[in-house]
Length: 199
Image 1: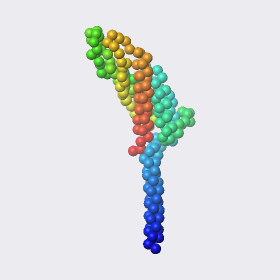
Image 2: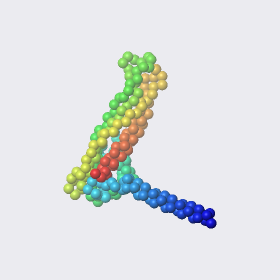
Image 3: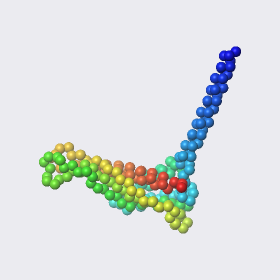
Image 4: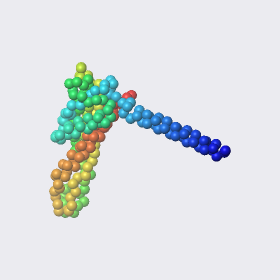
């Protein structure tokens, strides 16, 4: 009856292995839960927050919408705090776009038949400076404050032939807007993560 003993041993071994895998999966998933957003919170432990429209001090019209939406989406995804109206939330996030700088990056002046000292820009560098304050509604006390600086380069419109001396302004504007949206997303990811860190 040795075959029966082998059979029971293999069934028993499989059950132990299966139990171990299930237990291990439970432990890993619970750790992943704690390593994620579960151990994060707003300063002071507040569970409701208002996020009014950002104040835009730059000359880039409409960028405040991108920043506000990006921060709201971060809180919707993380569920660290429930977003409420400013009238009912105990704290609110006062966001400002302080400045936008667009600087010329690398130059390319190697094309033939260009006028003397003419330079064609190969790229632009866009820098966005924003600020967020967490303010308690009852006494207007600032509980948390940070400034964020993010920069990203984008390629300038390409000139196809040496005799062409103008480029598509619409392309350049569209490219800049895409970069600004990306910078809004990155800045608000930084803001959310730093704001909800537990020390």
